[in-house]
Length: 196
Image 1 (cartoon, rainbow, N blue to C red):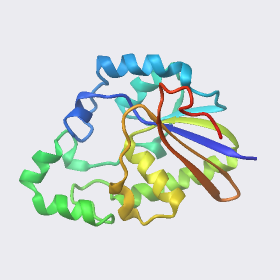
Image 2 (spheres, one colour):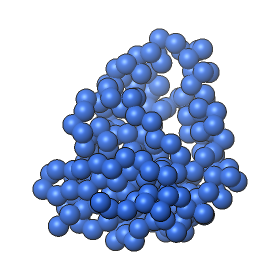
Image 3 (cartoon, one colour):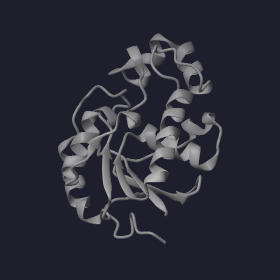
Image 4 (cartoon, rainbow, N blue to C red):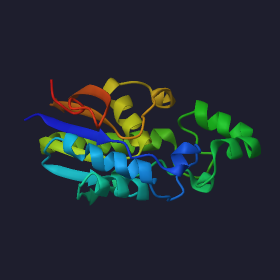
């Protein structure tokens, strides 16, 4: 049986606009309105899962989705950098930021490394592939990056080379240990999550 996972990135928030590490803030009014408008473009799903972050929970609600929280799909844990902008961290810890952006095994913030996160998402994907049917997953952009790195068999250093815009759908499908990838389409497009 073919499994499909459609990853939906959260709506815009002030944290995203400011390049701020997640601070638990809400999506903004425009982001919520766009999510509500995009709700009709979602395909039917066997299951819905949502990252535990506030903006993913709020995006799911605005999309009309009621899903279980999936701790395995949590955002990258950035330790003491949480709530700061990348510019603020760069000004205070430039060597640490450089190390973090170039060495996927490092976690100078005291949180989780990119490699650890990629492994966590890979484990979740393995379990999802066995489930069959379509899963909608409202998750942070870094979860989408980790999934794409896995599907492509790319090195974890490729994680930072992937951009995931707000309210886009990235779909993977597969069976027997092999995934195919359909990259981030806007949710308001009629063909955003259509299967080809």
